[in-house]
Image (cartoon, rainbow, N blue to C red; front, side):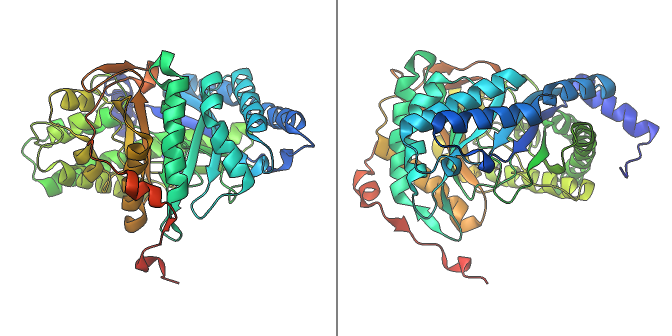
Length: 455
C-alpha cells in the first residue's frame, strides 16, 4: 500500500491513541441506489433495503476487526446513499417518508450509527421529488432514529435558491416542533448546504454523489486532542513555526486514516474513496477545537484574533493532510460545532462567543453554523435569513458552508438543550430579533457571482 512506519512513528501514534483522543471519527460506506426504483414506494423501499444489506452487512464487523488489529478506535460506522429525492422523483411526501423508514430499518439491521442521503439538491430549482422529500423531512426525522437529511440550496455556479432557503426555514421549525419532546433533536439530523460535496463522510450531510462509484469507502479522521498537545509543547514558538508543527501533526493523523481506509476497502471489496481531514471535536474534555485556539494564545474563543487563528489552523491541517494522501476530499478542515465542543460551549456561556462571531469564523474553516441552539420562538424567516447569510459566504468564497441549527421548542436564551452522545448539549444562543421577513419573502434566486464565469 506504499506505507512504511519507523519505530518512533509507531510509538508516537500509540501515545496519540492512548492519551490524546486520536481516533477515526467515521468509516462511511457510500452506496448507489439509483437502480432501486420500483413500481411504488413499498417496492422501491424494499429494493433499497435489500441493496444496503447486501453491501453493508459486514461494515461494522470489519470496522471492529480493524480496531482490534491496529488498536485504532473507529467511533462511528455509517452509510450514505444517493440523494433520495432522485430515486423517489414523482412520489408524494408519504411515499418519501416510507422510503426513509426503510433506510432506518436497513441501518438498524447492519448496525450503523447513522445513514445519510434523505437529501435533495435544489440549488437551481425544484423537481417534484425534491419538493416531496423536503415536505417529508419533519415527519421522517421524527419517526426514525438513524436517518440524516440534507438539502443543498446554493452553489458558486448557480447562485442561491431563495425559494428553497425559505422553505428550509419552515422545515426546520416544523422538524423542531415534531421532536419537541427531545429538545428538537430532529434538527440535529438536518443540514442545509451551499456547495455540498459528493464524498463527505460526516453526518448529517453525507450523501453518495452521482459522480461516485457503485460503492465506496470514505474515512473521516479527527484529532483535536493531538494537535492541542503538540501546540502545548511549544509555548515559545512564533505562529509560522506553530503552523509547521500543526502541519506535521496533520500529516501523521492522515497517514493513519488512509491506512485504515485502504484496509477496510480491501476487506469489504469496495473501492477506497477519500480521507476527510476534518478536525472534528467531541464533548470530551481535551478533544476540542476551541481549546486549540486558546492554546494558540487567545483568552477565549470569540476574542479578537479568533478568525485569524482558525484560518491558520485550517490551512495547516489541509497542507499536512494533502502531503500525506493523494486522495483527500470531503470537507477537510476544522469543524466548529457548538454542542459537540466543550470549549465552544464554555465560550458561549461566558458571553465570549456569539452567532455573529461564529459566522465570521465560518469564512475560514469547514462547513458553517453547526449544532447551534436558538430560541424556540425564532421565526422561520429569521432562520431562513441565517441560512442565506451562510450560503452567501459559501457561494462567494467557493467553499462548502452549511447550517445545522436547532430552534429549541419552549426554550429561551441561556437555557440548555441536551441531545446525548456525540451530539452533546448546547446553550441556547441569542439571535438578532430585527425582522428579515420582507427580504426573505422576495424569494427568487440570488444570481451567481461574477467569478463563477471562469470557463
